[in-house]
Image 1 (tube, helix red, strand yellow):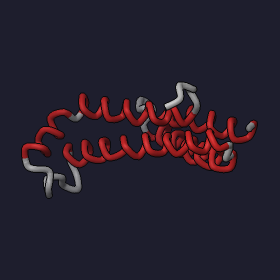
Image 2 (tube, one colour):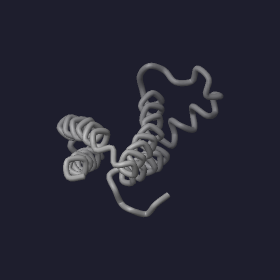
Image 3 (cartoon, one colour):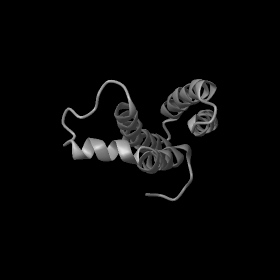
Image 4 (cartoon, one colour):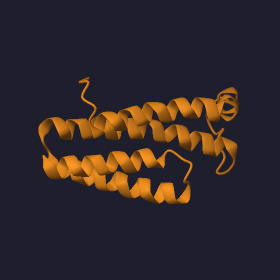
Length: 120
């Protein structure tokens, strides 16, 4: 993995951080899910559901970052702009709804990806 701190690299880091934060914030709920054997242990609502969906987002963030890095490496400016726009919009809406969350990181990374995709 190259060490350049591109938007894709930052997305991968955000994915890893998301999982680490989940392990701390949702430790008890995640342990309950594990104790119950995982299968059919997550209801539609409540602490377990929140913990599950928070954790489920982490690999998707990491994967999105990995794909962005491929677009960066191959010079696919359209993919970088599209990914950046999607991240920026998601980050803006998320930050408006939950201002003390990490959505600001998505917004900043999305803006950086759009700028990179425009400049080449």
